[in-house]
Image (tube, rainbow, N blue to C red; front, side, top):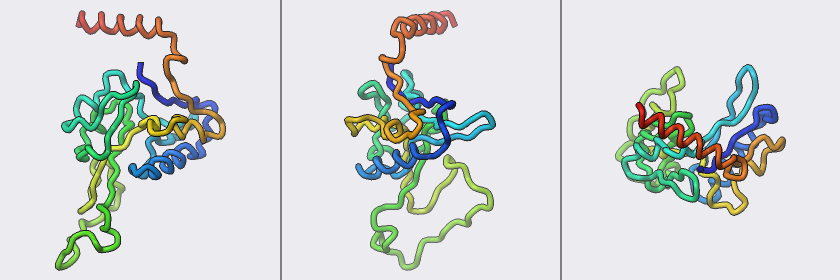
Length: 194
């Protein structure tokens, strides 16, 4: 079973500390400064949603450049390989992958590229555009998803910084392995019959 982070909606207070912690640690190691989880508010409560690190990972299956792989019982996305095609975001059943655009180094200070005049800028729509449809001239888009802060020995930063301890890592210690095996066997039998 792959590991993943889940939230207890009864404990979540919607403070966004998890998102801030996530952005901070990823930016420090040179990854996209964008949260890998999104706090969701509903009429019945609040809680962050993020990648479930699926055992069959549809996102990995559709990635044309193999930027998404299985490593250390999780689904990892290599941002340096990602071409920003957004196929993984379309395939994700949980909506846990978000395209995030960054300008090339030097674009903001005028040292990137030389143009006789600035490139044309498309008109900004009145209504916000969904991230899957958004684009900006000169901007490189990469997919971002929860990576369980694999680069940190202490584990996911969102879990560490949550003031109410609403977030926790689900792994083999939290799940009875015999139940998982029974469900997998049942699912395999159902698929074989279908």
